Image: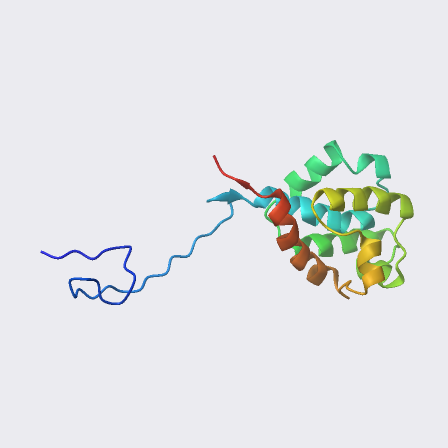
Length: 157
């Protein structure tokens, strides 16, 4: 009796048995590597410049951990939408309006850019100086998620 080999190099093995070409798709969020935690950290730092009444010294530590826990698993667009609703209720410009005007708080940006460097990301100022900042934050974040995961993702035990 002939068995199919899983390591076939061609459509026919040495014995002439047809070997189907097979593709395997993995969902890597937690299967092979922990990508959820670093993705949430990137989302946090993408949105942190636009948080309301959060002093720069509170952006790290407990505030960050609580925010990540409360938002874990939510789509980035939903998180930004919620933040924009909070900003509107407070009579503040939207995230995209602040980005377009480049009107982020400089002290907060120092903390944000320090965190970005630890994730292997360029500072916001460097991105702007290079002219590579995306017009929409979600578009910027999407590319930076992938870049940061190269630095932050860890294999699962």
